[in-house]
Amino acid sequence: MFNFKNKLVPTPPHKNNGLESSVGWTYLPNNFKKTTLTPDLYQRRGNMFAFTLAEVLITLVIIGVIAAITIPSLINKTNNQETVSRLKKAYSTLAQATNLIIAEEGPANNWITTIDNVYNLYKKHLNNAKECSASTGCFSQLVDGGYYALNNERDTNNWNENTGFRKLVLADGVQVMFTDIRQPLCVNENLYNMGSSDVCERIFVDINGEKKPNVYGRDLFVFVIKKNGLYPAGCDVDGLCNKNEFGTACACKVLREGAMNY
Image (cartoon, helix red, strand yellow):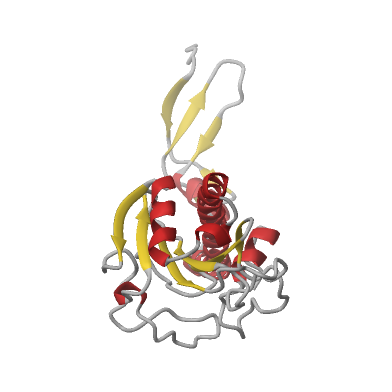
């Protein structure tokens, strides 16, 4: 009597329910009942667990639809969070510089006398990568025109070529433009709208430099200088930051809410 221990041995053809079966292999471990696994049995087992081509294609289509719905939303959310972070940083940088100037020169109405004086004072307190003053090269040059508004209106101003304003680029790529002096007396301290004649001066910032979208309220924002500091435009007006407006009053809304809810 032979003792096959944990070995595979061939078995001859045999009949099962009257049907001839092909040659298989018999696994004969000690203390286990002899079992025969034939090729036709393997085939039947495989058919029980395989996916059809149609099932695979349907699954891929479902995954594609879900991705098409969710990925754009995730990308938009990520971009918005990045915009909020960049705006916060730009405002913090310019607000600190403003406070330093006020500490040295007094209230803003004391030193906002000419645009060149303002530019030189800020330049001293900012980490600049490039200084253009009235020259070109420090603000986005848009070959197809100016910036767009939130309401898709086109701004016809070409800020890069404007020689009446003063421009520089910060070390992190933020483009800064000091615009016309609005009101040296800065009379009403409760008005922070960009167009108000009671702000001392306006500062435009493109928070991502030459990159798109080049839209007010998306990457171009406005700060205003008051007698006692720098403020984001729009803090005194409600409802002027939405897709039906130009977008110049969005800086305050974004910084207040920490999000781009428009």
